[in-house]
Length: 222
Ligand code: DHB
Ligand code: MG
Image (cartoon, rainbow, N blue to C red):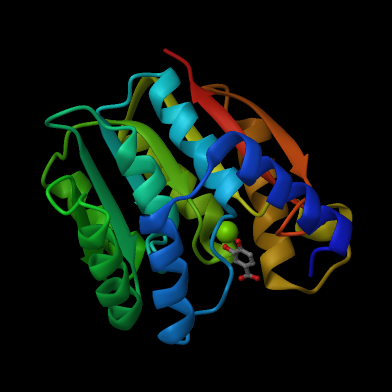
């Protein structure tokens, strides 16, 4: 849980820099109504993802973990005419809620939500020689993060940006002896990125509406 002051600062950021956002507000309400866990990115973080996609002129975006589609909406907004976002979601109910939210945001024509274990969906994309993605956002089960990054590397081109959510876990990432599979998965992700010469990376700790967590950000080298 965020502290009151962290949440208040996020409210200030949203009020001054982002403003009213009917589609995202409706999506958040629909997610609560449908009983989805409230673990989507914050509004400030969603706008950050949108800005990253704009900064690199992303035309093709891959998302791993749709949940209710809040990050999907922010990322899809960055796409130009003809741009495409494919999002993988294991839970059919989450996918249905997300499709409604994406449609309500006017983005249905740019977004393709694929239901099933993401690793299978990503494997199928390799088989069908899906074109490379410009930006990959990974925000699903943390145990599988190394597998998702490995798959993303096969669906990337030099310059592709890979962003992974929830890599700090309230500092838990440094607990070497942890038995929490989410922390072990996160540490395995750091090990993979450490060993992968093709990735130049950092991680940024965040506070705010989602309390203390962070993003790993990497670029695929040529
Ligand atoms: C969890 C997952 C998330 O994607 C997130 O943003 C926060 C928490 C979780 O599974 O604990
Ligand atoms: Mg997350």
